Length: 456
Image (cartoon, rainbow, N blue to C red; front, side, top):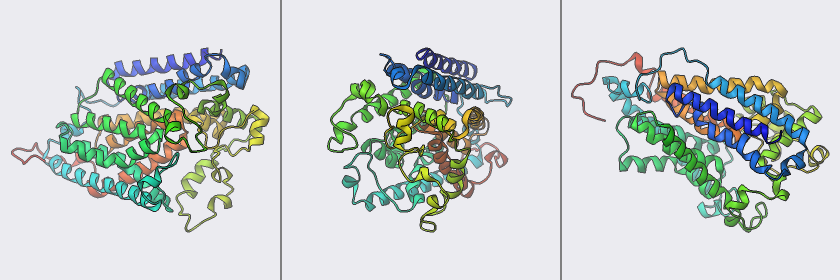
């Protein structure tokens, strides 16, 4: 049973992905693009961990099967929501989005210039915020001389501004849609994405590295202006995951002297952890978190979301003790569940590592119990809605959709909050900036096709 449930999860995800691709012929459909991440995290990875039965012995057969049953039902609803019938008429042919046709109008020529300006504004904000945070810790070498290193800023707004580099890169790609990238375009794209690429590589952060590499690939596809094939997309995602896995596996070698990391390691030891290292694994943390929350009946019922949406945006310079004052004890340490080591030992027989990641399904379960299935379905439906907007309207929706599916790397590897908080920052910043620089829906202003106009 402990191997059957993850295997079913991987097969069901693969089935939904193939159905979505052959129905819409779009490798960027969310059910297709997210399939390797979710099937790997919730299907293949637990099979690897339990290859000798160590996972079931550590957690318990019945307890593991209970959590994996919830995972299976949640994944079915997540992918079912993404493949629901689309009632809107999608563009015919291999055009990535309607922007390619709109760009050939007189107004489209003007809008390209506005898009370039918007891309440079967002890119500059991300670039400046990143290097300011690096300056605050004493420079580049000092920032990355430790495990999970990087810059620092007292203002959370400055610290999160580097996320604007992703929509900046995608918007820049829109200015080249249908024309492809030149050498100078590649140089500008790498410069725009460099803050997050540095953070992912030198800081050994899986999320920023995956999203940065995925953004580079997606930007190239956007510049081509044509829907990508399944093989090319699969090969790209596989290569990106392999690169991220390699960099992540070498963290013990790069930061050998850091007590939080331990001694030297390698790719094999990271992908195939020993039985005595199993309790430190993120998948185990997710299963364990769900078990602990269920045992103590300590569900959050939306409190964490309210704190993130209402309290977190308030600058700590104005309210230094904001988390303590509202009782957000889970914000005070590196443990997202808020349970003490004694509580963890009482339920699991071992304690979870500090700063552990639990994955989207466990995170939603800790928030809403089995009502989490509703939110899992709504998340899948939201990604589908963004995809429909991208295919039928294009413009800013293309940038937002591609950013959203890029951030999906956080769903199996970290939590739902890691996904939605980053997406909200990127979406709000991009929407306001788009409205300010570009204006309203281009379809309402499109004029006759440009004749003899000077190319942008």
